[in-house]
Length: 567
Image (tube, rainbow, N blue to C red; front, side):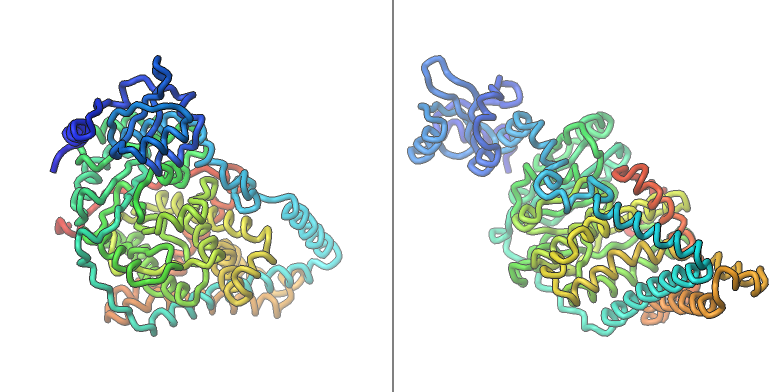
């Protein structure tokens, strides 16, 4: 009902103190840094500077009554004088004063406190030794008996591919057979709604800003209980200028992400988490369009669940799903994955990856989990494993966010190469302490998590080699092949690959069959070709794992068409 400038004047008049603008007044940062930043944020005050009369000037956004005065004077060990400031100005002042620490915590906190659970190091010393020994064993076997080595490699690869495909099929069947839970009533009284933080990491996306501001302005949530933090990299002046030019509503704030490496979305989100005030928190992309009542639905989902529910995930639909064959295949894959496989994983209490966007968290649980790993380019998968290991779980929420799918082959390759690289990073990180993870998850949940996290990228990597194996079997005489691969291994490997591919076609066709969509069922038959693109992307991701492990490959999804606009 009033803007922050008017509110500040009213607060100052009521408290009989002067109002200040902390962006222009001189703040003694050395003084500020003598006490923890978390305390200032929690208690909504910050010291400004020492006064000539021996007192400390303190900015406060809460009434400086006798109790507050005594508490702050005790902390500072000095008499205090107050000025009034807005909560946001206090948070911004703290962030500026602790800029280096925030940048470091958002980047290296996990690596410093628990290096074994950070993807900063790609391969640990133990994993490197194990890999070298495994390579020596294969080399020795190849020298002594090429045929035996070929049989071992093909049998292991085909068994892994079939196991991964069968696991996904079983989860899809479980998801298909499960009854859809009734969505809880999302119309909670406004006075009972918690403070909600929306994080929007943007990077070189100035053109997306006007639509982003308009979309988030339509969220059906009380303005006094909503803060939208737009996370902008320090160097990205074009996007910052576009945000300011769009004149966002008062509850929208720009949070500068200090310059540093790696330049990834999870690092930006960690900076946003530091200043977030919301009891609940959600991450959206700049080009995503959530349903207006999604925050209310998430609140209702948390209210009807136990304290072990750390995250609820909205469904994703594609605004350009009907643009071309590739976007149709991506939408078909997403539908089977999100609507069937992931819910079944969640009910089985296996690790379920958060979606990377439209993921709603209990902020306290997210902080307990240590936030995001800034070095992991599929941070959602890593976070899902950590949630499961700490006894939390993720559940779907009955709401949808619209986003554009990768509409060109290059964009698809860039996106999926990052995803595969992130899955491999997560598998390497959580395989460093397998016994500890088994103790945390139990053997059954550990096995399911391992199948999902480790075999998913390995299965995709196996697609091109198996196609080449089939081609080789068709072209070369059997006698030539037998010198490096026994007939039983060749036949068995091709059969396992064919069965696995058939299973993936069935998974893709589940939804269309249920809806009676004959055209989409026919499209599902193109899954084997679609998986060739997956495999190409996977090899690019595998190469980057060792050359550019923390590089965040952005995806230009192409022109965006909104169904709501009738396109």
